[in-house]
Picture 1 (spheres, rainbow, N blue to C red):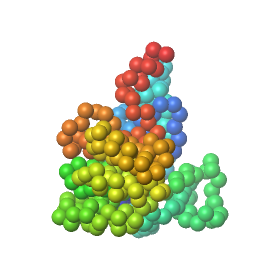
Picture 2 (cartoon, rainbow, N blue to C red):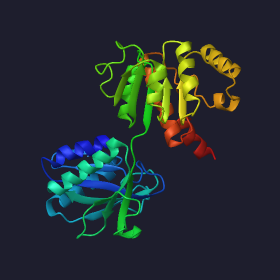
Picture 3 (cartoon, helix red, strand yellow):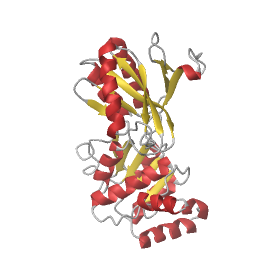
Length: 324
């Protein structure tokens, strides 16, 4: 979302645009509540799901861009034969369209970017009325100007953090893909020639320091991927990380390497339930071989943990649903 707002700020500095926000959904739909798309005169930024439903929103948004009149757009994805549908996902979406323009709009977007970049929190309030403009609620005790059914409230949260320990071949595509899917990436390695900004331009931080120093410095990461060059580096990192385990720790390597790591840590007194929580070997089993493929499998597992997925094939889920 941070990248979306950064692109939105650039677009608004050039001309007005319409922000399309999914404010409610029912049933099966392609995007979640809060999904956004910016409609400019000659292009769009982001997506609310694609297909005929998005095309309808774009047409309506261009009208809003011309008139400035805010409106709701209903997208019917039920597939019902007696209704004008925009898809067959099975549900419906309600999208709010509002024109953003001028210096105040740019300033508001810059404030949102600052919140997301700094790790702060706030709430973006979008009133459903012609005479009110979107605004930020920063303080928890700030009085609400609009009731729940009068506005859409979106909590602005910082990006989830991914700490990549090791800056070798797998780490390079892993950092790039993880940043692409919405993680704030930090890379640490004790080798200064590997942990460089040139190799990791998408990372928020690149730290070339001994692991014992670097891991204490970034100990608040929610997700950790150990892609080090050897078992001793894995053990060095895990001895620090397991003192206060994050939401996810994944360790690269063969099953033998992973078994040796668990056995060593068990001998050192680490509880078996803590060791069982390790994602090791790291990544979903998609038959990955190359560094890029391994990075994809790791990021797939990160998404699974973050979103609460099952890890099953979507085609298997569809087949199961049909059969039952």
